Length: 610
Image (cartoon, rainbow, N blue to C red; front, top):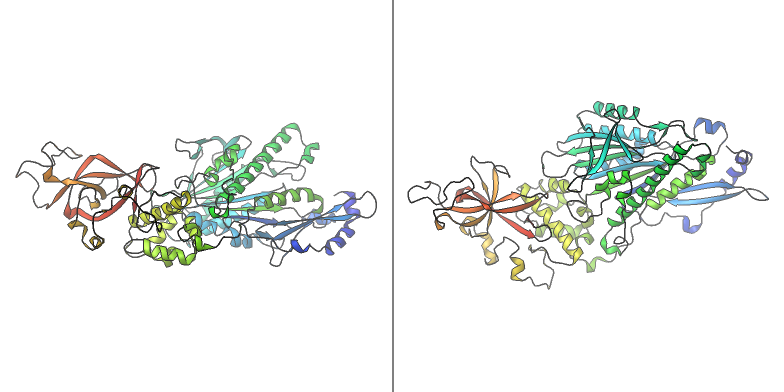
């Protein structure tokens, strides 16, 4: 520690005790985005720092505020030293007396069920070298392992782990003896860790063994502040597969130990190679800051103004953010924009001798925080899902979820419209399936309907013609209604007539293919074309069998039969394609229910609705 600080330590302590924040600094201001929490962990002074007589310079204000105060001693030209104080509002503060368990329960533990339900959860540990990042991450990984493996989470999942290291422009697999890998985008725009091994984990002990093996291969080097500073970013990725919804995207849980940030003053003790390394680290951290802030802005309600529209997410500017593309990708389509929750833990060294580095860390954390503006009155947004409160959302669910109606108490016990929109699709569907009588197809269709309504209201266009989506005073033309397989000619009382008594060309039906398993399994879907006896003798089905054989040669005991076109799953999740030339014969006794499909012009696929 500098001699100046040692000589004036008593005066510094006296000035800190006398410090009183200004009136406008006594609150932390508006709340931040709940899906992007920014926290700070202030570690205790180390024994060697205490032996040198170094006082603390970073303090949690406490009370009802989430403000960190940092004080530094200013050397005057003449006279006594004075105090320079800085205040940083963030979402959560954990002081030297807080344990990792307390921090985990407060902000990290909710991320685990979010990823378990199909979302993307990310934890970043950031801070200057020697601030306790790796210590914090190691404890958090053990706690995450316990939550995943103790059987407290609902449902069965398959867990897979990979751990990679990013050092500059190079990437290494820490579970495969530091073998170099590549970060590439596939033809669908998804980022892949090409060459990285993925280990299947079934127990807590195997989880922790992999963590320890990876830590032993992590790249470290001595720096001015730490003899074993992390000189790379370590990414632990846990992929959570849900066997009950095989088409849904897997949940992802990231625990990321970022490389220690470096200050320019350290160049006096670093060679050219180390300074180049530090520059790459600081550049990637700067890009990460822009990506986190940009994505947090994009996740705010669109009614909050033009701030989110102008958000910029430069995730392609560094290897770190390119690896996490699905966390930051601003694409508004349902297929690429994942439901994400992110927590940043800024680890802070409270030693007075390191106030400059601590100031940079806290300034970085403050810039990451995006506050939520005050919402406008809801009276003008009765048809905008993102503006619905819980009561309005429940009312819409009850009226628009089909038959049987999905339980609003189970689907949205406390959520607002905006919160339900951010719910991962597998979790949304799992909640719907808890209502007796609701099938997987019904739940999937209702989720699609809810998302379509959100897209329609954001773009002020009509792409959906489902009942309940119509805006008051908006006239829907006949041509628009023909984008749905629902019968627009039938009177409202027709819904009480069994669908088998009103079969028509264009109706979509689900049927049980006895002895035949196709792309959708034993239960298939098809579009009715005509009665079998209405086609000529040259017509054959997908298997080459004659559809309407000569009199007396047709199958007996099958009852009324129809020629239908097969409906097959499309490349996008939840989408279907009508294969007009793949035709099958379906008997009325094989049909189980009518299915409503809607045509989406943007994706050129059909989607199930209710």
